[in-house]
Image 1 (cartoon, rainbow, N blue to C red):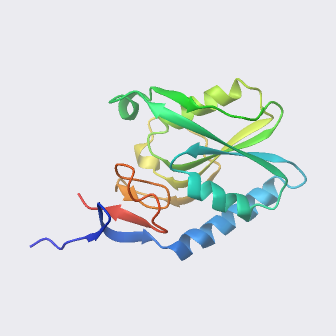
Image 2: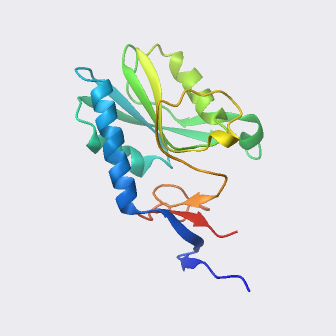
Image 3: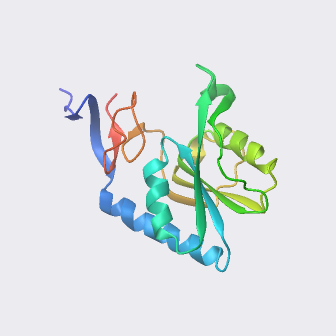
Length: 182
């Protein structure tokens, strides 16, 4: 008999993978590393909506540098992104990144196709530099060589929910990351 998962407001999950405490501690470490790497400089923290919203906010508070923040939203063309990476920008930047040090903040990088498209789009705007910071990183599924300078945790192929990640727009507000029920 299969053990039942935890059910919470239209979502079910098997187990908690990263607790709120683990997330907080790792984000503090990432913030210190970014602060040290960009000492004496100003950065732009660029969150990719919607999944990175909580991570980006907490990361910003963990970085002790002058910074601007902005958000960008990427929408997929239905049934194409996971295999082809075909996406479109649905909410563009509000600030000019020309000549600035940009850190793209993602919730999770799996294939890397969407992030690669975003990096190419941003490079055309001539920033001083562009780096990637993702909370979760799955190098096993990567289809493209993507330079990920900062990452919180390396994950496997499990489907995860919480701390910004969703299932049908539910579960983003969970303060932890859990493995989804199948």
